Image (cartoon, rainbow, N blue to C red; front, side, top):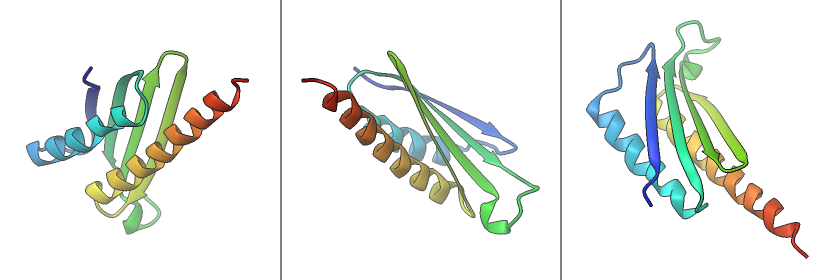
Length: 105
């Protein structure tokens, strides 16, 4: 089953390069958890950020049956923000899986 990845941009044009990069990396989330229904990636440019290093924002929301996991990160480059948010999401998925498995006796 392939993962449905939706990419949205706010104050930022989603170029073909960005879309390919994000789609390629986000589709690997299926390896960590089997029953992911959808992954939503929101990429934004925040003009009014406190620091120039926090202008680009990447939010990843993963939904499945009975859960919603979310990760957000800011950086000075959209690719860096996405990569850091993706690694946060992978850690959250591992933590969720651990909680789910520990409850079984």
